[in-house]
Picture 1 (tube, rainbow, N blue to C red):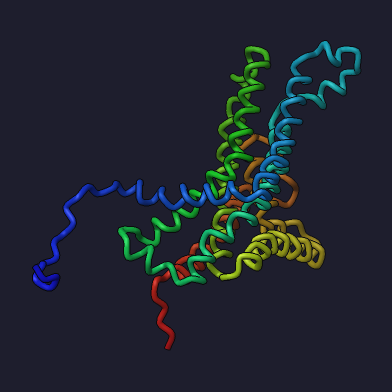
Picture 2 (cartoon, rainbow, N blue to C red; picture 1 turned 180 degrees about the vertical axis):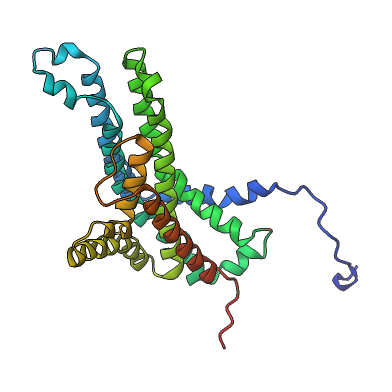
Amino acid sequence: MAVYKRGYQRYRGPVTGHWTRVLALPRFAWERLFQQRLMIVLLAVSCLWPLLCAVFIYISNHAELWSGLDGGFSKMLAIDGRFFLVFMDVQSAFCILLAALAGPGLIAPDLANNALPLYFSRPLTRVDYVLARMTTLVGMLSLVTWVPGLALFGMQVGMAPAGWFANNWHLGGGLAAGFLLWIFIVSMVALASSAYVKWRLIAGALILGFFFLLAGAAAMVNGVFRVEWGNILNPAKAAHSVWCGLLGVEIPVGMDLWSSAAALALIVVLLALVLERKLRPVEVIS
């Protein structure tokens, strides 16, 4: 029978679920990222600080190792909100470096090769596409943030006296919530930079520049106007204030929990507008 005499029929075979289609993108992206030697090295280096913190927790909960020292030393070894705050500050820096390395390869190649029509011709929306790319970063950055953080919290719970968890249970939730907030912000910066610039190297530099330039702008505002509220322009400082509120630590002078949260929300909205503008399968230029 001739080909032109065969009528086309609708596909009636098995159809994959919605989340199966969405998670297909991060599955292949993770495989590609873990093949990069620099990524493996950076992940290994980022695990050094959690290991040192684990040693610190062990020493803090074994008084026989430092019983001969004065009482001031015991206060330095206390495992409280400040301890986890320092842990979050250090790991947040590794979070930015990992995002600068992994983020540019998520969207920029699709834009450079005009692959968005190929994605969106499938049963995937723009929200699904962004969610899939963000899932890639969330899974990667979780390995150096809340996963080791909760492991340290569990280690402390297991070694501390019976009443420690009842008095400090909020530290685990605050640590997880603070890290998830930071991962979301860093992921939005990485995706927006990757969508705004089609070259991976420049996109990576843009991710780093976003945090350093805003930090410099905040310092300039504080120096020129002799104020402290300029730190809300710095995403790292604003997130630090939110973490202080979650962990029950005193917020730095000149900062406020709600103003810091509002500044971070504004940054996320602006980054979402960049993604909405750039992630379009067809762009009409008049």
